[in-house]
Length: 602
Image 1 (tube, helix red, strand yellow):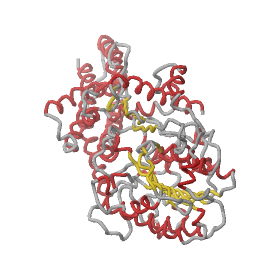
Image 2 (cartoon, one colour):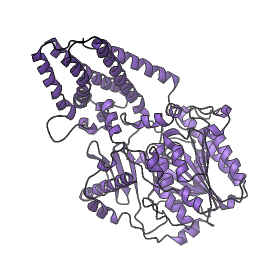
Image 3 (cartoon, one colour):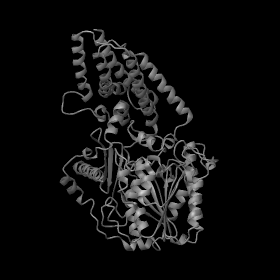
Image 4 (cartoon, one colour):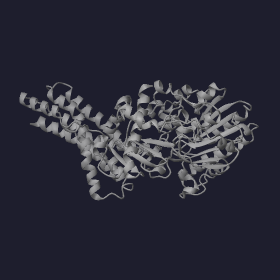
């Protein structure tokens, strides 16, 4: 009988460990959940049991098998070692989920591992020493509590108890798979509310991590909603190209084709930082001035909420995936087209400037494969300039890019500058323009941008220069992340430089993936190898934008917008009339089905 009690003690212990994680989540993020009722908070714990007992089932299998064995020397030591190791791993998952949810807005998945395996220093750059200490203490406390609560090792001593224990072990398949029905457990199993934060509070971080990790390579089975023929039929009109670029309009906006293109990718910027959004004032005055001096695309939507995926969207015109990072897969990113490779083949020299570690998320392998010839990163600067958690601050990086731009006058070139100072932990050098640390970091990056463009204007090549300015994604402002609002993806895009004839606002709907086709069209080059990119000036092409966050996708078209959560299996936002919503949703699903099929075939 004691063996059976040990079995259930183990199962309940792991279940309650999951419950502890949810209680901590509700306590730490009580302000984010301030609109939740007491009943809804209780429902979080009840619905969470579905995945908590699934993980408890997995974690009980090994102890159960040990109970079936005859007692031997060393078994108690092995028993204790199992509980302390698994308790530490579970504690790590709980604490990681608590720490990452605030800035990321979604439960723990495989993303941190992708970052840690490529550049541990950069992956930890956003973490302060105090946060590290708090995390270590949290992990130690949870691990110790679970270990002390472990059951004693009491193996089955009779055949009857061995049979009973074996039957119970086999029965663990029921909580693991979620019952006897055709459907099995997945992250969305615990979703019960219109409030996605309540759903996220109910997610077991260990389960979510395992599910995410298992989907890293199984692309062929992901986002399959219909036959390929149905998908192609739905997208036929959406992806048509007329090649009827509005030449008159382009001539009215540009004096000539640029021979020098400078692209600035601003970390975490968004239109929410600009005064016209009505949230803050004088945070990004340089960006706003440049928008007034150049061509300001007011209807650009970002494709993602992570930098690695945004870079592929901008430079290779592959929209971001909700569960997958192409940059992190060298075997696949080596096959991607890129604007750098096209321009290099056309006689441009290609440069990439970044103050951080380009090994982060396999960035270097992607950049090399994409055709960048000169890659400047943290190791390219003296150690005294590596003052921030992310490496070199934006100021020295912009200075290096400007110096080399001016020093290569007459050269046809593409230069990409990626900033990082406006990323957590917002440690900018000797800049105290604003009291708020986050806004001060944005103001610093903005001031560096302004000085950079002023230096470019001093170059004799300014008259042949086009400067493209856009963010990678919306970041830490506003502080509350809501992945199911269109404002979360609203980014500024600015074309400025000596080739710009007339400052204006362009209100054509577009996305980050459209920049390549637009630039190549401006240069008179074909962009057939970029099927996911549309020339913004092509008047005959249907214009739309797509975006993705973990296991949720959205699409904005001229007729409306829709956001679908794949875990929840539910439409989270729709501005379409009811009679048009079904077609809009099927088109969105068809789009991502085709995108995943493309990635699987790379």
